[in-house]
Amino acid sequence: MPIVTPEKYAEMLDTAKGNAFAFPAINVSSSQTLNAALKGFADAGSDGIIQVSTGGAEYLSGPSVKDMVAGSVAFAAYAAEVAKNYPVNIALHTDHCPKDKLDGFVRPLLTLSEERVSRGEAPLFQSHMWDGSAVPLDENLAIAEELLDRCIKAKVILEIEVGVVGGEEDGVENEINEKLYSTPEDAIATARALGYGDRGYYMTALTFGNVHGVYKPGGVKLRPEVLKEAQAAVVSEFGLEDGAKPFHLVFHGGSGSLPEEIAAAVDYGVVKMNVDTDTQYAFTRPVAAHMFQNYDGVLKVDGEVGNKKQYDPRAWGKAAEAGMAARVVEACENLRSAGKSIG
Image (cartoon, rainbow, N blue to C red; front, side, top):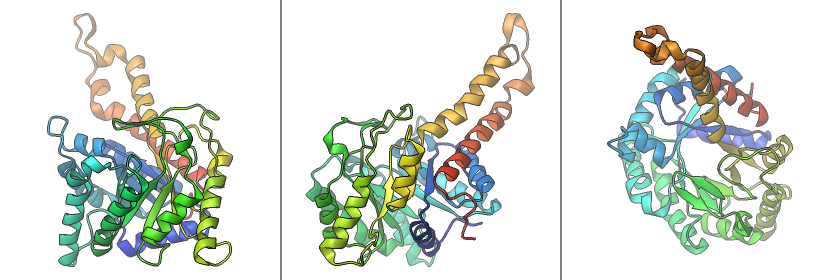
């Protein structure tokens, strides 16, 4: 199917929230990892989200070029072409963008989408993330308001982060402390600044102990009830219908999370869960196996010529893509999106 329209993306997210499932948002940094993500979603019968970080976008432009906008545009163009061959809906997203990279990443991409929409075309991306976790909440929300206005004009959904995700991603590192848990007051301030769906569509990454990186199951101390409390606080503060889930929530730093923790987060309104560390490993592990098992073919050992069929990048690339695709299927099953494509 073609990359989704803005309207289809909103339908995807609303359907997920209304039916208590979530979409994996798979980080990619190459055509191979993009193709692996697409195959994984198709194999699972799940719609999905594919995203690039600032580092991933730089890499996509060429390791010596490091142009986030060029890499993002190239990624979106390639994805738009190859996604047509898969029977599921796919949305494109840009991941964590801190304040010092807004002018070199999200704002220029929004300008491109505004220009496209003015010509009657679809936006380049379906959503962008502003990561204001490193600045005071008031400043975070002020910038979010400015970006939300632009996103609405560009028919793009904004994602924000309220709270702090611990660990490290793309050179941004946060301590693991009490700031990892968003408060009901944070949720109310967010709704006061951006609304609760009444003033424009956005997603919120409230934090509940999330940590980026590699952790064994149980190593991350998640408190999914924080999300339930946040939704309830906004319902109470603004007189919304009892049991409503005003926020479309996002789950960051999910590696090592227990299945029951993921399930609880989805029950409380999570519609998008970022998956990066686990799929990186799932991609690389088969490559390592191929190299070890075929070392005398991929290397010209003792004056021999090696085996072209074994060092051809397609040989180990296919194995890598299959490994990553299988991990995407697992993510869809954990988040209950498998078999639920809205067509």
